[in-house]
Image (tube, rainbow, N blue to C red; front, side, top):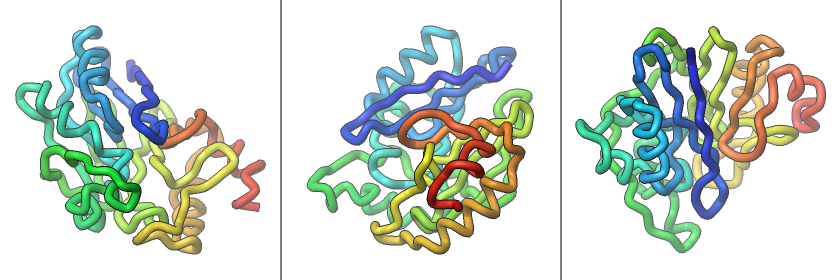
Length: 210
């Protein structure tokens, strides 16, 4: 079974996801926002081994906990990121623009590409490149069960901001239409902020898409 534990962490209330194949006890952290000890503690409590960190993008509020997760896990899990967001990662995810400093954690060593398949135990996740919020933003889609971790591309009733460096409004809309709305309506959407929704609900009700 694929089990998902969600946390809301950090100064801007970012959603972090700890996901695991309960049969193999392998786990992955998606977007460790902050407070890595909470994430690792939840994995240990369940007897899970964190084997990787997957980043939807490199904004500071999605990477600030990666260093602590890596420090607490042996061996340190590799970090996966799309190469177009490497410059943003090296810039501490833009933290300085908000008057902050963070430790971005271990340098990404897994280069994500569009269509790449990531494996977690018996489950497969398709990487879909979804620029517009950042140049290297990706989402992770698991067809069985139908679930998509979408970072800051789309939210319940809203879409990601495009006013930060690397953002582009039309590019974001194109990404949503081609890479999110192309998924089955019943697909669960787990975003970087706010509550869970579905592809069908956003197709029908999201004011930015109608």
